[in-house]
Image (cartoon, rainbow, N blue to C red; front, side, top):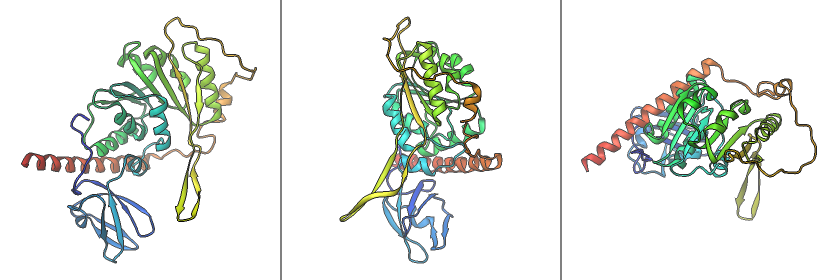
Length: 337
């Protein structure tokens, strides 16, 4: 990605490493020359890892063994510092497929959060694409920038973060009909649907990630009422792991169930009128008071405190600095060769 190469070869200072302990517990660390991992099982020095190949097994001061691997995108997204709640890997995978994010696409993302979805989108658009992420809060944007730089080892040329409101900033960033895909992760996506329709090319896809059923219904009805999109399609994804050991094959006791709904629709050509879809009559009008009953705060979701958020910013920026150190080391080695 414009010079951004995923780390490979021996572990270097600044690399992000995932350690699996004696009981399967995961620890994600950034390698430092003077760093140590302290647990109740003992101490593991980072220098025991630096220079070892990916997939090595190392022993700590008490003789406990740890498997060391560079984290996959899924692992990184689940362990990286968070400002806002992340979009889970199961949903990111569905978004890339359902929105048909292709190499070279021009993609708009609204609600960058901690950057988990941005990582998946950047991977999908390749070196010739363009991702513009809009975020209202500068502190969330800082966490996302640092997380993306940590993962790729550099700030991708294909990515731009715009701090501001999508409804105001999108028309300034893109001419009408020049955006291929729009992904919305926000509380009230219907408020931005008109500017999204203007920016999308005919046949382009808008995908909304929505937390509650009431929000899902309202945005679906709004999209239908505009007459500018195909009939929206809604779904959710639930993932259940399985325990497989000899003849003991059974589903896990825990699963990743509802995290959010995905709703997709495609932009019609100017002046096109979609065929009428016959459906049963249903209640389709909602007032603001109905929506307020189902906001994340109303249903008990906790918001991150300013103090905790500042800590996440520092953690993400520290990890990004380590990634820059590791990238510089790799460039120096390739130059010497």
